[in-house]
Amino acid sequence: MPTSFIRVQSSRRLLAPLIALAAALGAQQLPAPPPEREEPKKLPDGRLWSEAVIKANHEANLKDLERMRKILDSVQEELEQSKGHVLSIRALKDLEELERISKRVRDRMRRH
Image (cartoon, rainbow, N blue to C red; front, top):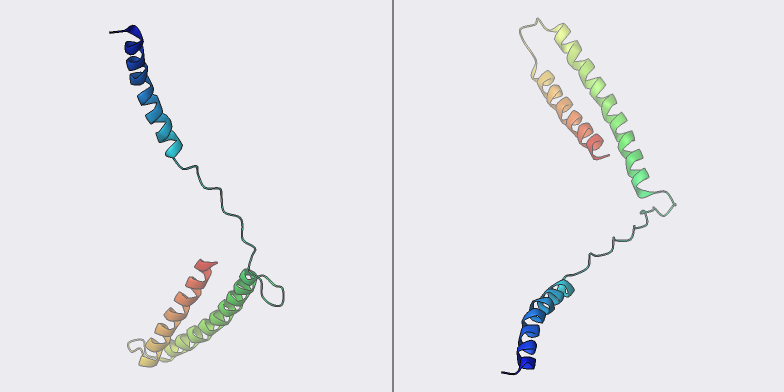
């Protein structure tokens, strides 16, 4: 066998893994560029949508907290008027309403 044939055979054996490695590296995708930052949503009057939501939630929380104070005062009055052994159904319903309102306020506060 001529030596040139052996050289070609051995160079093919060496080049084959290198070509496979180059193909595998070339087939990998480059990481995607980071997405562009979106413009904040604005209302027709020019205010930021997120700021308007936060302000509306704040006002709703204040309103709900005032309602909770009124309910709590009425329950306290009923407890003071009762003999201590009996709790009216109205007081129980008021306490359930108090719980619903407090959950609503807590959920709003967790969101923002």
